[in-house]
Image (cartoon, rainbow, N blue to C red):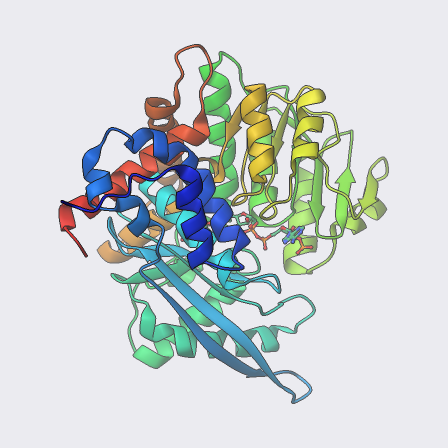
Length: 451
Ligand code: NDP
Ligand code: 2IT
């Protein structure tokens, strides 16, 4: 008789924890998905007999390597780099690279796991991966960042390729870092291929890739509100972060007639009751991205705004909230504060910004809650379109890409409805996203047999 994995959720999670000791972020991400998948697969014997859940929670491979570089004072510095190739059942591994001192194997495994289902939800043929390093780009000169990126790519290049694994940006990795890494890849291999996305426009990048994650998150928010006969116009929005995702989410909310009143960074948040309009967003983009400044400087620039050191913005009254900074930045107490203050919708621009308990608060309160794997998929979707343009050696116009991004976000919303619509006016977007993403990857795995 075949051995099946008909165990209960608690027993399954004990096994995950035993096999992945000291990896809290990874086990949290698995638990969040497994909570929904257990119900879904209960009566579907093939998923049990083929041990799909057990297999899907084991990365295809985790590569770890040493990255040495020399700082401006001639000191030799040693960092650790990783690439987690989680699952390539539906396409080449695809996912960003993160440079931040908090990066660990657990963080990258959770991100690669989430990425697998997110990429499936886009409808594009992309598997899931993630990479990064505990390198801290803050306070480093451009030359130091360049030397680090070159050293990182000197090891990474042997594991990636346009049809194998296509990295992109994430926290601490933007246009500058992608440029240095692409230059080094080309130099080592002598191949000019679409091996990275988020590239500059001069060398194969796609229009709207920088905007895509933030814009996509707001399109998703708009779809949720529209489903209830409402819209973004006139809504007060609280946003965390002030990087790529946060600033572009703020921009799209503003364009749609909403009012953004907060942004943040790891130092604290700014509250501007007058609204952070386009001019102010442009100033933040230059100040934070080009000048690598702090969000606290905003209050010197714009009177009427206040800076709240060491705090998150979740106690500020709002209609909608978009956590766009990092994982576990919104806990259950803060989720309760949002609900108590009348927040009706949360769209996660970041990956897993809400703790498991916070997601349960949102679900119990039955507010609209879009998990990151659905709401922030616009970035990787446009990365997928960049891959297509690179393969075809052509580029689409901005208007065409804007339309494709909107179509993709609407498609993800529909996929969430297919498995998450409770039929009583409430849509469980977490369940919808988890099941739709899982099913596509799992069915491809079934087709391959035991591999
Ligand atoms: P950026 O590096 O551009 O910005 C990150 C922002 O988050 C900064 O404001 C940063 O503040 C803040 N932040 C980072 N770490 C922490 C922390 N530990 N505590 C508080 N604030 C923190 O990154 P992105 O905007 O690209 O990424 C933000 C989130 O969105 C991440 O979760 C990422 O995985 C996710 N995401 C990104 C996509 C993309 O296309 N870029 C696509 C999909 C998801 P500070 O400057 O002080 O460090
Ligand atoms: O979390 C994410 O989806 C990203 N950082 C973007 C990945 C990508 O390949 O564009």
